[in-house]
Length: 356
Image 1 (cartoon, one colour):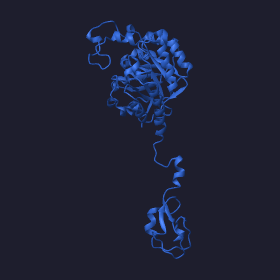
Image 2 (cartoon, rainbow, N blue to C red):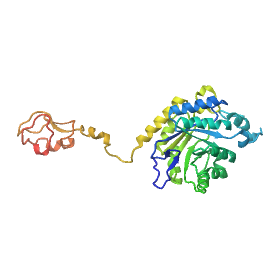
Image 3 (cartoon, one colour):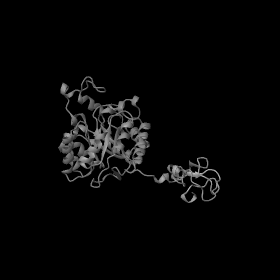
Image 4 (cartoon, rainbow, N blue to C red):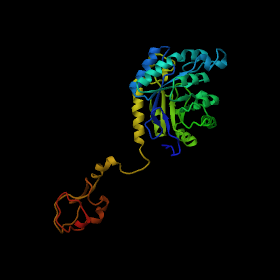
């Protein structure tokens, strides 16, 4: 596991510290899974809260702020795309966007239920809008990592900036982190991501997480588009402090991203299992644990197993390696076998050098 150095700035989102010394921070990404219904969006918030997620996240754009209404090959997904083959970007984003007037009730409910609520801005008007809603952080989506002016604008608010790195080279990630830092903001988190939907876990490359942490001296995490929670739990072992997963009420219930999203019971399992994984990391040392002290008492050692008299020889019949501890080490039997007892000894006496 990669451990962040003592020079890595501590990041705080609202009232929570984010980093390897804190429980993994779980972000429930709603995306377009509200399926055009505010009621469904609010139900997703409630489900995320009940599941124990620490934050709910939206995406703040309209079809017109993220692209333009042109249906040419450049503006259309490939026909063989698993989920959205052949669709124009404008049409897809028109369906998937979260109406801006929904943000306030969604954020309000999330806060009421004890969660943080923030969003991914996709243009300067979104940053301005989200600032008016007093979000505690900003998330930069993978495709926007090359939009350095947008990153500077979000980081310039002084709020923590979480940067997804799907498709990005180390040079592009470095440029994005430097853009954020150039504003004087050191509250930066970098997420590994695979920009395919759903993502093949074999493309997750979780061994890259320590590289990100070491190269940029920031907390790292995973924006995970694989099915299930296995990749996310494994990421914690490589130093992930943040896990972002798309969530839905039901994969069968529709929603543009529902096919690769977690249902509420799976989100609850993600929260509990990443916490367990983090707790299990412990320290980089090999020794008896504090909880094992009682167990140490019941290691094997040499004991007198039959009543013996002074002068009797030590044999395999009257001295054996048994539990508990307290006698000579089992490997010393060869040195004591054939010697004679100096004194009488009762069955159950730990063998010591004083006895032979």
